[in-house]
Length: 376
Ligand SMILES: Cc1ncc(COP(=O)(O)O)c(C=O)c1O
Image (cartoon, rainbow, N blue to C red; front, top):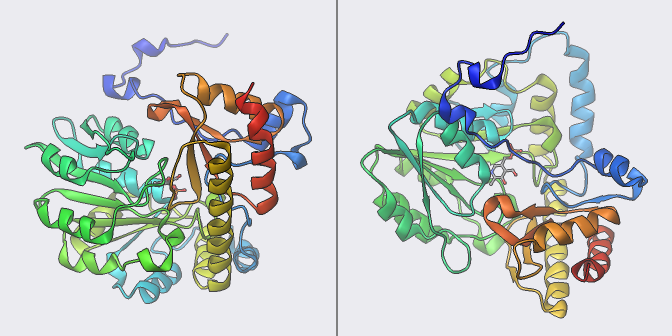
């Protein structure tokens, strides 16, 4: 007979036991099973993945790397780091690789937080900031968003307390898609005392239109307390492989590298990411598909009289009703016809849905189904 231990008797810290697990977008196979649908006809617009799939260049690099899978990866990821170093004109010892950029966020919390200390982040910002903070027993200082659901940097700066050691700032932000202009971020970084580490999470950076892009890597020279967190999961199309990276000065990088798992990024993932980084054509196609889909979705929301937050990421937050069940209800109606979107009640946004931008046909299928789902 199996001997069970009740969870209450496990030697676990209260703050760990209190963690609400991360809920991701529903997998296609699960929806197919639940609703008896053909998986090939299901449209998943729930996890801000790249609808173009993975780049062919990365596929070829992975196949080649597979012949070496009996060996451990290069724990120092020389080839990928060198490619990143050249691409962003930063020294090798400014780079930390992560198992997705999620890993970087967690490493930052492990390195710079502990019980009795606090992290500052905005209301409606990426859910992992709260999870990573709680997992190390630190206090979350959640700062009210501005009227457009975006970051209120002045309020965030004011919210910093004596025990604050970390700030998370997403730009563009998930799930709202909001964006803060570079001069405002630069001014914010100038205000934050240098003993507080700032993680600038740029997971959606590559979706910014040209005129809004700025070279945040140069800020790392000026702000020794800054960590940029970036990912290959979004515009580079490699979410399943789990590769992200941090750019920070050597003192911070050294700490992050000491606490990461020695082989936190697989050899196949390293090879694919290096190939994807060189694939400008794929990146441009990702950007263009996204920009077009963003326009089309928002034009449809306008026609339907739905409120949405103009998005700078690869998803749009749209308000689908006024009651607190609206998001869940409309999402459930869409699921029945094989369209997976993300209700965001867990972010405190129960009237809204977050819809990832898909291929033109997927966006059209979603829009066609949305009218009936709103009336469900
Ligand atoms: C703002 C933000 N940061 C980080 C991540 C983590 O992505 P990954 O771990 O795949 O790099 C996400 C994923 O959705 C995100 O939205």
